[in-house]
Length: 504
Image 1: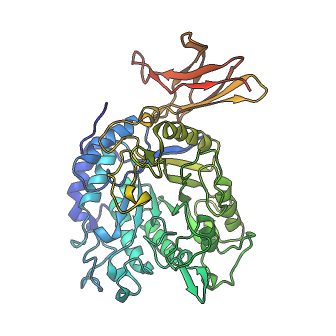
Image 2: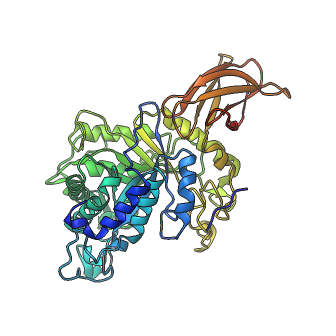
């Protein structure tokens, strides 16, 4: 079993040598394109794209070989900016100048270079919290409290100037509906609370998006990065907002989708111009086909909840498609996965269900043409951190395709070739779907097994440019289906999981 080891300009003179060296080993990565019939494949693993030497260098080639198109990367304002715990910025510091010697770009330089060398497009989230001096009220001692939108825009400009040649897509902020990243979430007085973080974020996004587009013309800027969970009945100003409620407040629409310009957070309203919405669907421990009970939240099969409110916002003038005003706004699912047991006995699903449900989720997203990206979270489990009793005893992420020890889970085998099949009611036929990763035109051989007989070929189909295929097969009795393909002529066959079906 596999184991893993633990602007070209005067502004850029300081880093010119770095980019020149990187250019020798990798061509610039153009933004991948997602067709209407399927989503790009992404990976999000903050430990792998963190500061551990050698880890990303080991993982990135495997990501590419497994069919990953984009890798999520974070430009962490607090870690890159100087004097993060000071109440005032350093004298003479220009946050919009990427060549400032006070900025620390070392790790992000390395990560962007490694991804480029492996032909992986970075999906770069520029996020806070920032240094304490960037808070609107540093005396509170919280860097998360009301970040200064102008100061953040300067940082976003510096990031886009430095990495623009290698980055085509940016996300502004990470999970702004969570107090761990942005405060306050609510304004509460006399037992009544109203959303506040959407208004704060709107100012942050508008300033940063303008700065990014000016520094890196032609790039796409996504809003959101929203967490799927929240509280509709908050008890505290730091309680997280549910994503649907957050979106309505961000776009200043009421629960019926009508424009709201009378709420305190919607006066002097300036709509955001976005190239898409990033979102983190979360099924808890439920199958992807299930809908979340709280209609203010959205799992992977609840995409209509998100697109409905986005359409209402767009129609009412609460949000603008930056590329083409009349075109609906697309979704990017940047973090998707299942916590597993082992090791998480409280929140995890079985390894078998993780394997099955990740493939079913990919099939569900295929049927949602406005979803342009499905990003797996994580590649490898994070270490288990005991932070208390019950669920807290399994802090960290254990939704990887590999355990922290590097041993592959079943989902690691199916990730490069997901497969899903269902029995069509009353038709005595099976509907088959799959994807060959990396994408491209491939010949797929569909095989069927009856009883204890050997698998036999029932059809050969061609995948589309992203590696997707669909097919049907007669189903008169219980049978198992799978598909096989080879990456090149004479290469060893690769097989999908098998799925057992009976007529319905």
